[in-house]
Length: 172
Image 1 (tube, rainbow, N blue to C red):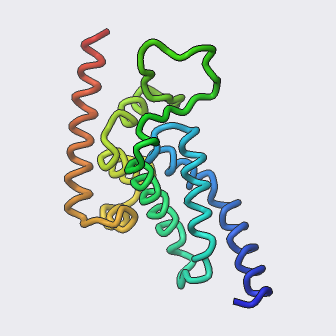
Image 2 (cartoon, helix red, strand yellow; image 1 turned 60 degrees about the vertical axis):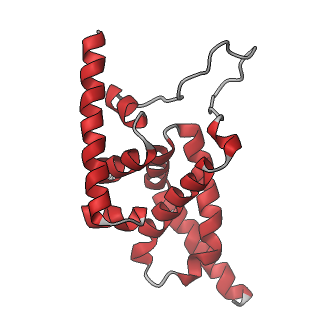
């Protein structure tokens, strides 16, 4: 790629990211479960997308490509042993906590707390289907799985949300 073409690709990528960052960050947060990890996840994913940006044949498919990259990057993170014990926090603790902290969230509602508690595959399917309002086929394309897998993960996720909500209501 010539330097002029590379410069055009970077400008095009920069304008894409500027326009789509809020939606991509929402998706990264739905996948990662907390805002701090979502920022890191989005940044790492965009770094992986930039060298391949010119290879995209259809700019309309860019969202699906970036979402798939975010999802795959998250799965890759989960396979790293040091990432499993990491908990994002806005403040540094004065001393180590006596018990392990729960997930860090600052969602706009109680339902989001329940969604974050779902396993990653179910959380991704539910977030794409109902938060991002994608079809089953679009969700399958983003996640790189079959439509049947999307349907089963969505169904199991919704069932788990119902159980969690009932349990939470009974605890009050």
